[in-house]
Length: 102
Image (cartoon, rainbow, N blue to C red):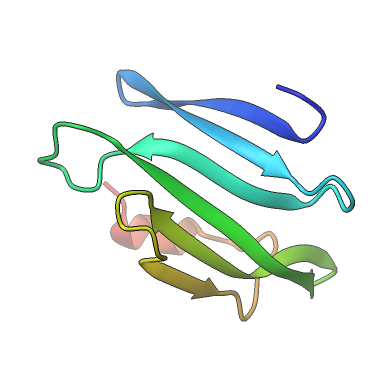
C-alpha cells in the first residue's frame, strides 16, 4: 500500500481474508494488524479486529513482540492481552500433528 503498510490477501476455505499490516517507520517492525472478522460462527456481520504489537525484544536471536493487545472495534478496549515468554524455532511438529490432525 505504501512504505509502512501492506495488504495481505489470505485464502480461507472458498473465500479470502484481507489483513492490513502496519510497520513502525523507525524500526520496520510490525506495529499492527487489522482485518474484518466474525466474532462468532453465527454472526452475520464482520467487526474490525486489531492486533497491536508492543514491547519488541529478541528471543532466540529473533525480534519478537513481547506483548500484544487484541481489540474488537465495537468493544473499544482489548479483550485479550498476550505475552510471549519463549519461542521454538524449527520445531518438529510431526508427532503433534499426527496426534491432533485428521
